[in-house]
Image (cartoon, rainbow, N blue to C red):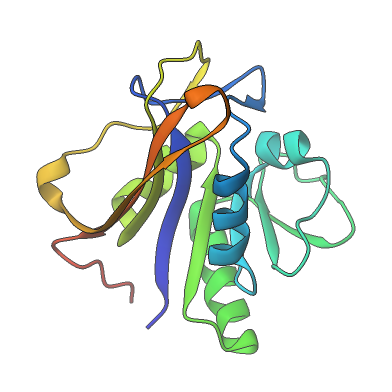
Length: 172
């Protein structure tokens, strides 16, 4: 069974981005992101892909877009959550991986949140101005599997938190 997981960094106000850019530059968070997602399919919206500016190496990049003419070498374009789900399963089967990751942005997180069984969150102890936000969720639906504190530049405090959904999601 393939596990679908969200990975995100968010502030106390659930902000995740401003003007299509990340709010924080936390090197330990970026290393964690790379380590966790390497070798697995990653699903993102087109705006998130544009903000990154390229396909992330070592991972199958799946871009969800409404633009039927979207094309970029090294990525797979799909037009719905269902298509991204099916493609991620196919890629995991091909590559012998057990987990696929949803990496943003706001709309993709909102569509996928009811469907994932794990959250890898970097909870930043800050309220930055944002125009993109992580969807709210009921913490009672989730069990904390791991929680580690960290501190970045300028005394920026954060926690790496891994949450598993209490009632498992089963895709058919």
